[in-house]
Length: 321
Image (tube, rainbow, N blue to C red; front, side, top):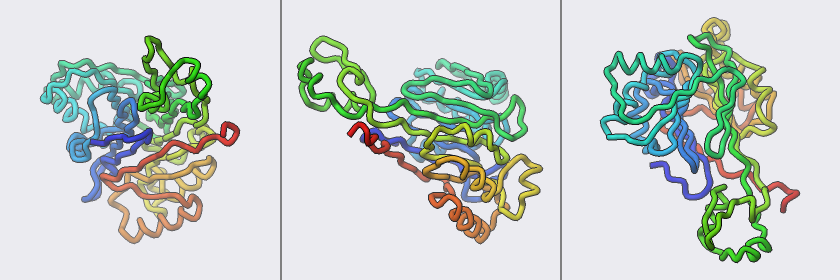
């Protein structure tokens, strides 16, 4: 299981292939695991197997977030929901997606004879909508990709973390030092001395929340990139086509590596991760195209299935040291 020892966020890439995936890549899916739960972005065929293989927690506060309703991003839904039923799931889950995701999922469940005795909450989002989760906000924008109900790109923005304890307030409230203070550091409320203590009661805010952006399938989309916050820790973006297939990429509503780098360079992005890799790439093209865009955004990598990326808390703001 992906276990968090501190306050890190973990991205687990379950499927990094495209509609016709290369032999060593499953269809699209990656999990964002944080202290209050897991968000699964897209659910291509084979996702349930990859979840088990990578021991990604799907127990509490589990959200399935669909970028668009093309089969390579959704064929894993019936298998995943069926597994939950067979495992005796009782915990509720949430499915988020573009307009029509509720009916789409119900039709798939009917077609595959999938039953569920656990609660499923459906939330349909339109470009510009926000979903407020536990300690985060999920923002959505329109993708430049044609799909039933529209296609969405997402920005996961974590709530800012309180960082520095106000020792005078700890003493005033007679709160002893100990392991319970770690809960306050993670943004949780504690109960001590017959009172409820929130992080803001005894801490100064010192660290910004992390930002993870996910493009979904899309042509280069300046509108999405320009709406990113001042700092984006990780941008997960499709890179479906080699650079020498730009015309085909445009016709299919996708992006080449260099197109991604050029548009991503309009924002401050700490790390760019390319996924949704087409079998049209040769090993040489993949290597050469990656080297080319690393000249634009140095910290760029191509995701492989089963990769895990750890995003630690940002540094303390200087004005709060």
